[in-house]
Image (cartoon, rainbow over all chains, first blue to last red; front, top):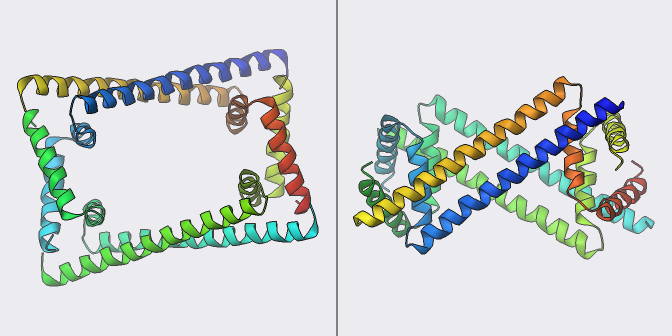
Length: 77
Length: 77
Length: 77
Length: 77
């Protein structure tokens, strides 16, 4: 491999490693926020459910909840 | 590595490979059942939600749904 | 939901649950084999590497090892 | 839920959502670097292998490669 290619390869590797470090730091920050939320008395599972719901359109949520309700009733749950 | 160790190593590998094959076959069977359910007009996401719910105690489901409801109301969702 | 649909839904759910149980049992069996291999003195990580290699064609393995070697040398590793 | 708790819950949710956005952006950046590396003629799988190797101590790499070599020879691979 020529010197220029090696420099380029090294640059690729180092940039990816830096971004992976940042990603790991963000994952740690998210974990810390949930720990803090738990200490403040919130239920972390429910908070995560809320975050998941907020990614959906209200009409999508309603449709899915209606369907789930129909299936549960049908099965006597 | 002695001959007995090699035989034993080979046996370990082959047994794991066989079980992995079976596991892959089961994953295919599950996928087929969901395809069949979809063809029969069922909503696959909802069926999966039902299967997930059935793994929980009714009291656990109720508690989680009550909490989610409280959080949603609090946030005006 | 009509009675026939409910029966069909129930059948779908129960078949999936049975297959999931089998899948979980297989995962347990695989874990047991690795525990047994470890007790017999084998290095489990290496056994898993071997199983991964056996899924590839020898020519594919050789090509990937040659490339990795070139990159490592280029980087002075 | 009291007003202060609601504000705090909202703050938790919004901070997590912001960090998740950043995390997604970083994942996109990493993907872009690999695309760029591929366009420059590098083998992406090998680059990823190199990044994985760089996380390990040289002595750990050597030990694992020695073991893998022993197992491969023993199995006639």
